[in-house]
Image 1 (cartoon, one colour):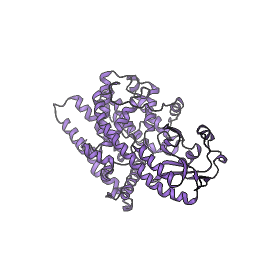
Image 2 (image 1 turned 45 degrees about the vertical axis):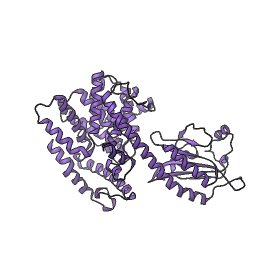
Image 3 (image 1 turned 180 degrees about the vertical axis):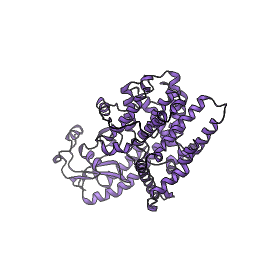
Image 4 (image 1 turned 180 degrees about the horizontal axis):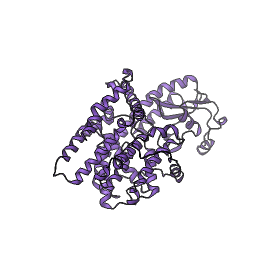
Length: 483
């Protein structure tokens, strides 16, 4: 879908600037690579290479365009491509496509031709024309990505129901799930080598920001916190989850989080750590089975997979394809469905399947509990979920299994909003992160001409303290007091 649209943009750009050949490379953020099937003379084959490699890779890394007057004099140019194609590259214009500060793609135009068909150089005027054209191309690519995501989310809603019904069965799914790129021993060892001996990662006052600001490899350190907390419970060993499998799972999760201010890998590790304290410092584990506890810690790490720093309301207000899909389907929790399906994708790889040692019954329970817990994190359902939990607790006819299911959901929800309960210096840093994420959403809403709530409006300059007091008074406080 979006490839066809990109191809149209790509052909128009080449004709506009009289380039003999061209290539469009999209940015794969998860792999930090450029890739394309849209290049002249590649016969539909996919091209992939790391960001930072070659001229296009450098442009993707720096965001700065390059106008090469003689390609063979530039050491970054790969002459092997010319040899394979029987072509001779002379001049080359390579520019990024950027939207809202994000590099979406890189376009490479080769050998500008004059009226006589002779190769000449790209001019500064050409570059300016390209930049104007690229603004519209960036919007088109971004919208096409959203449309693809929306269509995919629609399929995911149906497939999620199927996966929940199959409850973790290894066969029978309608999907052919793509196996993620394998985690290497070097990556696993980097996490094992992290020294956390000077920190009490089980403390209710644990400060994850200390790791972010003081550790040489903060993402590895965050992964190490999750790994050691879970291993320390003895649950992976009890449920026959291999050590490498657990590390693979944590690192595959990490790959699927974006560099947004708040809903990133650090957030889910913090939620995992907080849930650990609920379970083992607050004795919630006494109300749950050991399998429930294991599933909760695992679910904490997947509950926001691939979060884009935008809430469900954004897609509805902006009439985006994702919002239209939400309205049409009657399911406003499209992002949560997406998180669930990515979790299923990770667990479907035997190398990262932390439920590998479970028998059929326990595996069924684990999948259903994980999916239900993630879906319950939709803040639009916050009040209703709490009301249901409290009414069930007050009903003597409610089964223990139903109470356990709802307890798990409430524990995850409590962990998800727990930053306001942390010591002030820690809570303030989380508040600053979520506020910046809100402001970025507000900036995008202004660009699209839709209403911006005051707490999302950067120009209102709402005091940080007021925003947090509002959240405590109307969301976290009432919920935690009722519990």
